[in-house]
Length: 555
Image (cartoon, rainbow, N blue to C red; front, top):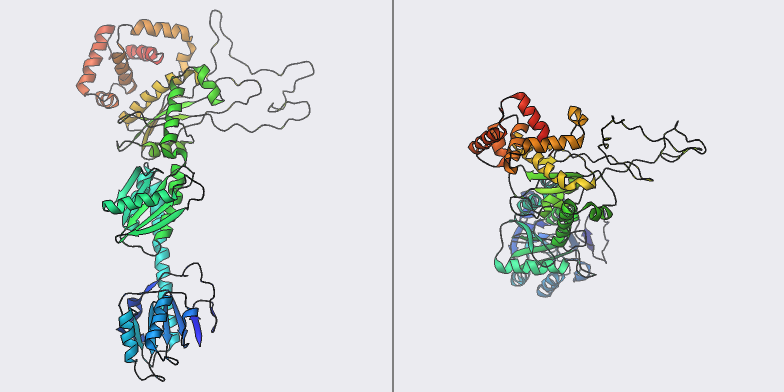
């Protein structure tokens, strides 16, 4: 008498507890009517309806067995009061009524048609040759096709969002792709409703205000806030999703229509944005990171060392977007995360490079000590009783020379030497990096990274690393080299010395030097000519260039 047609259900089964949601996307009534082999005809009620289930019942009042959204099929065996019957179906939330003619009724009762028209319930005439089971099978087939389309759409959206997340500006790119996939507006908001990034068509002011208010509902500023919320304002569907991390960032969406799979696509974007924004949640965290980097690059070593907990080596990186676009805190934070650090400064002002501070690499594994050995001490160097462990050999200094310090700072007793982290090129970015340096030389490394970035931009290289002094130049004691450089370059002003250094590093290229310094090529020619005059030297002579390059490397 009463049957709910759904997968894995047996005849006569009833559902007393409504499921969390429909197993498949809803099917528009028009798609079912378009199946000509069924011979269905709408004879009353509105044309628009979404079908979630198919249910067959010959009860006088099937209300207790309806979940809402059903296409109810009946032959009217116990139909006595059509108006009351239709009223109960509408009250239960039924989507439509399919009435089978013959053998009980030769035609659909006129009173039933009038009741459906009056109460807004779509009424379908089912011909005698169409079994109810065939209708149910057709609905489930349509649902399977809709489910397949939804899965394909979600898969394509997932691939597009993942590709956007790999761009140099991942957060704006993900929002732009999400807005395109949903056909609406995607906004990243702070807990106070401030817009961080946005993409897509802007809704009307009233809908935008409603979206901001909805975002505050899910902003995790107080315990118990929901992770998501939805609303409708003047025909615009609104959604808000809290990002992970507990700092109050919210993804807010405004769309003209809500399609099956939208929630899944939005969920994928929430996961990606949570990962991308995690290192720099909110303006306060970004400001603290920028302040820390500035302090490290300008403070005295005594002030910096306790904060770091390590003497280094550290690498300073200057970065610019390859396309010339400015980088905001979230985009710069994504760059820092890809390089393995959260120490990023992107708030120095428009047109300035992003600065990144890259710390030492992972600490090497400790070597388990055998009897008679100390931890991390190589086999074969066991200290005898009463002896000290041998120290690593150091280069012997010649009489009258100072012993040169090793390029890498020595580890303290009880510490393990840590390898410097090595920066690698990043798609969409141009990077300039200093050589690994101890904490005492961070300010100088900052200037070297700026020079390396200028060189990289001029040569169109994705990454340029400033190489430490080595080779023959390393054989000259640093004090003597510095004194010679000061004497040789004394006639030059700082701008002229910088121009000469850049020009020599780019093999005397006027155009590339102009690009690196951001000046006209004629300005470069004038400055280099002035350098030659002040130095009294022929800058076309290779010996002169070599000596000047050696001197400039000491400054």
